[in-house]
Image (cartoon, rainbow, N blue to C red; front, side, top):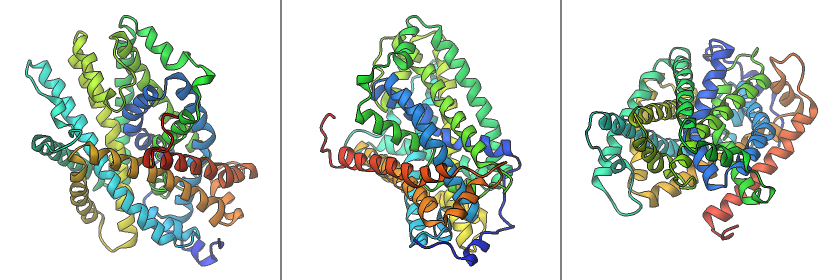
Length: 457
């Protein structure tokens, strides 16, 4: 692959591009959108599905050895090029980089649709807890898409909730980075942490809560660490940290030259991982205390936990707190997804930010409708545009930094803002190990989730 030309390097300067107000603002914003539903919704059910402690411990290892350097690579790519997904790959010297950028733009459009739907479900479940507090009956499960067929009630409820979530995102997005996105993160993240602490306290006070804690982090057996568990942990690390050549590239383009990418990556990984682990401490002790199944899959949040809240004193209050916290986590990620799209259009067209935001709001609502129909549409949509394409994007980003960029330029891009240059071994790690690991996950996903060739392995 060719090295970037001097003209391309000079073109990265963009004095009009907005940057974060402070390093704290940058970190808390990145933690916010990395956290998302991936930690409070997806992480607990992945732990339940893949056997508890073995998955948790290997996942923590993965976020350290793959997540941190992966974050550094993607934010360096964004800062070096001063562009988001559409533009960053081309400016960094990736062949057909412009086309690649627009391809991932389309993927984010599709992913945003189903992701906003899930946030809409959370809103309806929160309303259900309010209704229960007033003695009213609200069938919250009616908002979920049926396994098959068509439910007009479900679609209408989802359309209403999805529209409300999109409008709430618009309110923040039109205000820009500092006054909108960064300010929202500064409010939501502390609130979410407070809610998690309250929920953990309540879960730990339930009878037999200790059994849930032991299963969650203490009952590790080497035999449980199968290739299936390891591939799932790597894939979830990519999902949870919002790697994928999109989110982190865009927000990397908003960093200043003085920001230390190594420190930012460590703090982002720490905040994201701790929040996921705390979510597990809030959920599994309560699940075990009431003798429910921890391996109920995606329904762990929407089917199992409401039973927990219904069975404990003042459960509606803890249920409301949980779903408000879950909404906050998903909301920040939803905003980040929109920002990927907003940056692409404002960078590459003459459209103003406000017009772009409203245009994308309409497009996202339309794209959200097909996954509303039933799980025969929703689940493949999730696997394709979430798990599969996100891993592909992370692979392309790592290859761009490790192979398309000149070695010296890549090391300088990774090192800028740090007290000393990053070691050469880190560059080689990004060049060889991360692409290898992501390629393995991508092949595993193709074989297991698409071709279904491995059976129960």
